[in-house]
Length: 418
Image 1 (tube, helix red, strand yellow):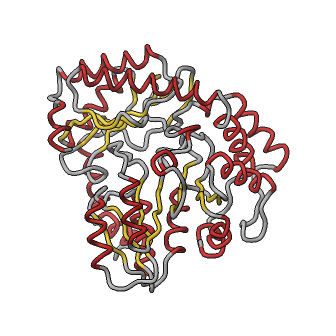
Image 2 (cartoon, rainbow, N blue to C red):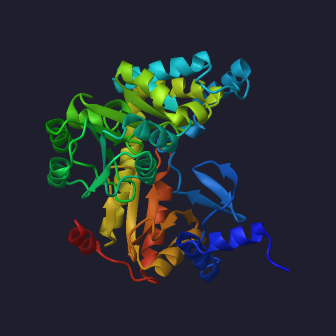
Image 3 (spheres, one colour):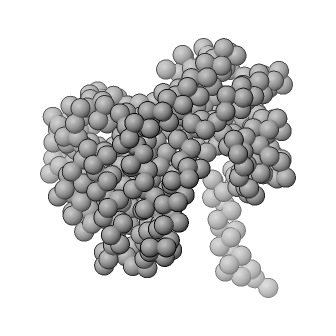
C-alpha cells in the first residue's frame, strides 16, 4: 500500500535543507538544543520556569521591562473592558478609536507626520515593501537585512520588481549598484537600523546621501532600535540624520514596547497609500484593541522624564555585562544595543555552551547557522532594564566557568572580523 499524500508531503518537507539541519541538531543534541522551549511561569527578577527549573531569563526582548509595569498591564485590562478581546474586522473596513489614538501618539513620539500600525514588524515589511515598488521601480536590499525584508524582496521580485543587493553597510557598493542599474522610475533602499545578531549600526547619513543622488528612498527597519536608542527611545534614524527627509521608518511594538504589532513612521500621504497598497494591512488582521491602549500608555512613558531613568538603568546593565565579558577575554559583538553576542564558533560547542549556562541557572539563546555564518555560532544575550546587578554578575561568573570547559574565542576574533 502506497504512502498517503500527507505522508508524502511530510517526507518532502523533511528533505528541505533547513528542516534536515534543525532535526539533525535536535537528534544529535537532544538536551543541549534548547529550541522550542515551553515557559511554565514567570517570576520576579526576570526569572522563568523552564523544564522544571527556575532560571534568569536573558532571552527576553522586553528591553525596558515594561511587560511587568503595572500601568501597561492596567491599560490592557482597561482595553478589554472597553473593546473586548478583538474588534473582529479588517482595518480596511473599520478601526477602533484606540487604533487611531495609538497611531497619532506614535507619530507624535517619533516625530513623523503619521504612523500606520501593522500586526507585526514582519507583516509590516512584507506588506509595505512590495506595496511601495512596482515593475518600473527598483528595490535594493542590504545583504544582511532582516529575514522579513529578504522575504518581502522575494514577494516584490515575484511581482516583477527588479531586486538588487549591496554589500553590508557599504555606501560605496550601494553607489555602484544604483549607478549601474537599468533605468527605473524610483528606487527603495531597504536596510536595518540595528543588525540584531551583531549590534552593528549602519552609516545612515552616507547611505541616505547615496540614495538621494540616485532618486531612491531610504527604508529603515529600526525594530531593534525602537525604544532603546536615540532621544526618548525614538531609534537610530532621527539622531543620525536629524530629520526624516526621504526616509521611511519601521518600528516594533513587541520588543521595548512590550505590546504587540509593528508600525511604519511616514509622511501623511504615505499612510493613506500604504493602506491601499499593503496586502498584510488589509488581510493580516488588526492588533487586538487592548494592546493599542497599552501602546498609548507606553508612548506616554517614553515621552516623560521617566524614560531617562529606564534607559539609564538599561544602559548601566548593558555596560556591566559587556565590560565584564570583555574583562573575561571573550569575543563580544554589540554593546550599543541591549543585544550582546558572545562568539563561540562551532555549532556543537555553541549549543553545549547554551546548555551549560542553563544548568547554571541562566537562559540565553544559542544561535547557530543558518541564522549566523557557518562555524560562527554565538550566545545571544538580551539585557533588560529590570535585570538585577546580581543576575548579571552571576551570568558573568557562569561565562567564566564556561571558558574552563569549552574553548572560547578571544577579542582578537572580533577585531579580525571588523
